[in-house]
Length: 400
Image 1 (tube, rainbow, N blue to C red):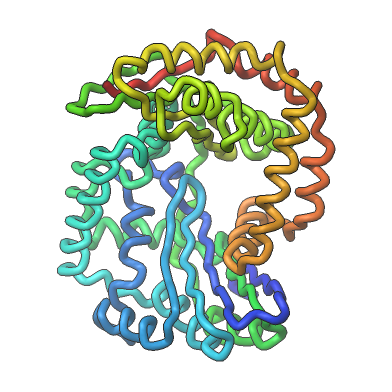
Image 2 (cartoon, rainbow, N blue to C red):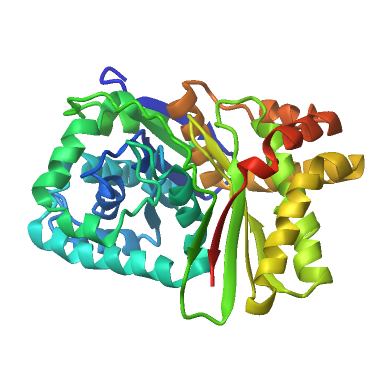
């Protein structure tokens, strides 16, 4: 559109529902000290009141009476807002998202109330190692960077310091229409373009700053131990990985699956099925434009925690020498099967297409993604494992 917003429509014939998603290129990775938690806080305030709909209850009632669903999410690079509803409510859904993005009032009482909600969210993750350990690990490895908040919510003290003025100032600095994509997925056609244009074309950017240039620094410390009163020990073991701009990301994804990505993976079988030491074993890697992480997380009976960590490290280091062709083919079929199943879902398309357009400035092609996985062979996985999964690069976060 004239104001720089990109619009993509994904026709999915025969569906009753439609998803409208707005993706904005702003996230915790771009936050400077003093701004930590701001992107996430803005996301929380999305449906808390606008000039047209002054109270959060007004918005909730509109959504509920239509049987619709809405939510928002923040990660390191993108904040997104979405509504799913039936086709006849398409115009309403687009207008609602335009209203909350352009006209949210950020009332002082709502800001203060939401502080309490976010603080409890932070505490929930702190109390639950299953939920929060991956974020803690990213903060441990990348937290020395001069720019970037690697636990998306920020710390409690960061949230306490936020007020209406700092929130509005942050939005004005970085919410730029040239960094925004609107995606409509469902049984829709040209009318979706017309509706988006009608409500979003009047959106004028207030952003006065380019996004800061991020240089991620790897923490030289290799081990972090956290003490908690718990019956179960938890660990996250990993290495610096690849940026999502690296074309070897498809190789990396298969490597992660082979290590701990499903019930057939090496570490799930060895730690849970053979040893009986854990209930969950999972891959929790992350990718940013500048860098990434390959990491394995598990919750283990306390007396076997050190053994499980040693076994995980042994499996990671030895992968390059012991990989079998069969494992690579199984991982491919797993990833492609999951992708094809997801293609039936509206929000898969809104997210997949939106992120490609926002971050890479190109239309997404699932067939191209599938072909990229098909091209991966055993040698490519072995070479990457030998490059990344080495003893000197391993970092450990243990909770006991």
